[in-house]
Length: 212
Image 1 (cartoon, rainbow, N blue to C red):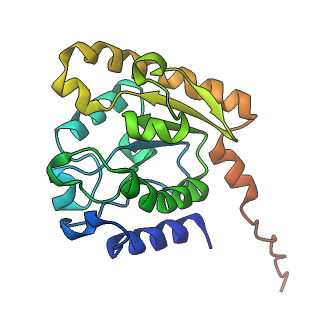
Image 2 (cartoon, rainbow, N blue to C red; image 1 turned 45 degrees about the horizontal axis):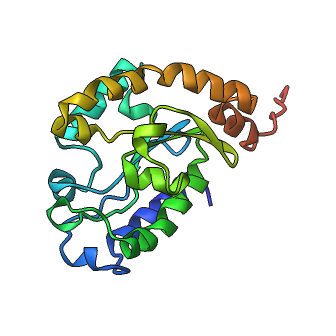
């Protein structure tokens, strides 16, 4: 299966998933969206009210701020893949529970494997904990570290700046470093994930033109 087919399959499974209690109150599941060849993958925490209504990630106030942060970093939403560690809205926007995170992790792992990004940017504590268990986001935010075959950058969730104005400068500063960190990741990996995938794509044999 191609990356696009895998992502479509995961999205279909997520839309009818009943593995945890979150499905009981969801209106629309939010599997995530973006190009299957994205170099950068953003992973947030869980859908909010607007995401639950539309079935799309980061479309509320935090999403609008994320769009501004991406623009500041010279990236557009169309360039990146965006999703969450849980695909259905926790009631009242509460924190996702351990069993809910575990139930959704199989979907997230399939998405990461299909996209194979050069950099994963975690937004918030819960996505950070997937890669850096026990770490404190206040201590590690904005610091790129290699995890397996790719790099991970933990960052504050954009919603944090909306609730705690004191965090906004740190969030702006972390995103300002993103273009340079992407360059470093590409250099360390030897090539961009996108270039590598293009090389791996099957090439058509040149057709010999008939002279008659």
